[in-house]
Image (cartoon, rainbow, N blue to C red; front, side):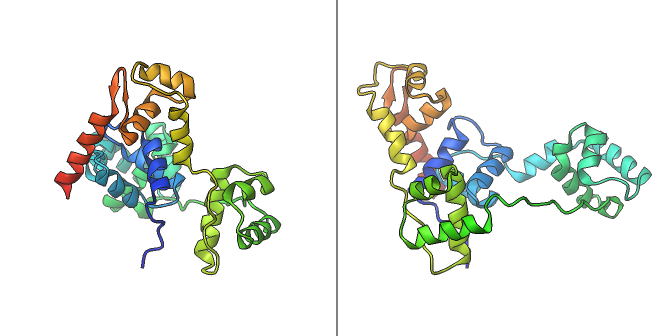
Length: 249
């Protein structure tokens, strides 16, 4: 049975806010970013986005675009000339001037059956964000039924950090349940728009300036709530997404 967190309304709202404008194709890099932020898998995020009507970049297209024949030859030549001398990140840096392409390089060398020529990457030292004392304090507050905000205040930690920590604690301890959040992210976002009153005569840029959000973020909020601004019809976009979802069903 999967231990992945369920797609609640709050988690779905957070995902929508991360990916932004519904008109763009969601790249695999954004999918990975969202998966890390929401502590789930890339596959789960991609599947959820497609259910919401987003178009998500396919894994196959990513691989096709990552390396051409010239790149492949460079890789082969480099690792064969320097057997077991460099890690994936170092190879990516030397060959492509980009250490961030380490995963792509690893995948390519795996398909080329050349991984035996790569130096093993030293284990990454994981720095604990929470001390044992802090973990005990969190568990104690969870047992008392404290809200997420209260736990964050008590520990002096960001709410998102606390949310991730208590999620890992609940996964490891079946006797503990996920604390509730006093004010959900979705409600907070809704309140920002409600405070503006009638927004039909306001442009997206004006709304963004008023509530301290990006224009992309405002469009996402309007679409999710089916609201109409002067230069953006969120209701129409919501209908189009619903239509796409129906076609995929």
